[in-house]
Image (cartoon, rainbow, N blue to C red; front, top):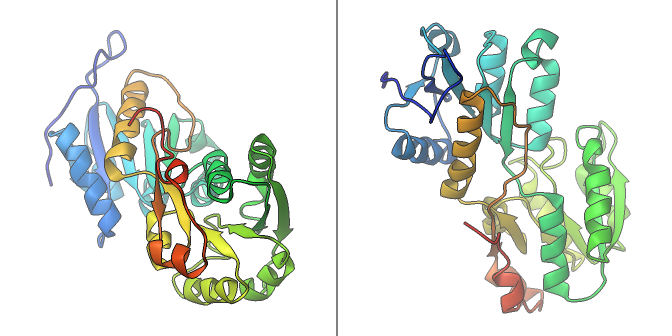
Length: 290
């Protein structure tokens, strides 16, 4: 465990320099390992641990970073009162984890960079790919119902029709997708009740047989068989995280947010097999500054 202190710009008056302390799982995902490496590259004196209580027991001012939903849950359950930034958590998992925490913990400065792109960017990508008004199907559950207004607003902003269906608890996701059979393209949103490692291939095969393209929520999902997705690289996420860490260390309270830096991933094989041409405007869609 690396245990050297570090400073973030000018801290609040009379406040000690804040240390960056990162919690990660005992068996971290490749994304967590890459994110940690990028954080340490920017902040070489970062402290890293896999035990939340041990990390919180360290003396002195600190900004904590949780790599993944499990790390976020562990820090909240351990009673951290320091500013906290969540990375590698989806909008859904972040909200669910925070909602389960005590009201006292939720009053502490808490921010996040969501793991997925904003609906506005995903809808813009769909418009760029199809270059006309199409019908976009979206399946939500009670876990993701809160983003329905964002999705509808994003669709209106680029003149797309949207059909949002709610999957009730206990429904079969593949059967629920049948209610979106009239949609030209499906927008997948990260929702553990719909997409899981166990069923993602079955879901993609079902949509492929219907001739429905799927715009995913990560580059990994594109590799698994969706047509395309807006996504952020590890370095882009860490660049945004660095700004939030600076703000948290200086007493500000930035809210949880979608990535501000992004680019596009395309599954060339899926595009060819579905006869969907993707031009340079769609391929080059990216945040203005990265």
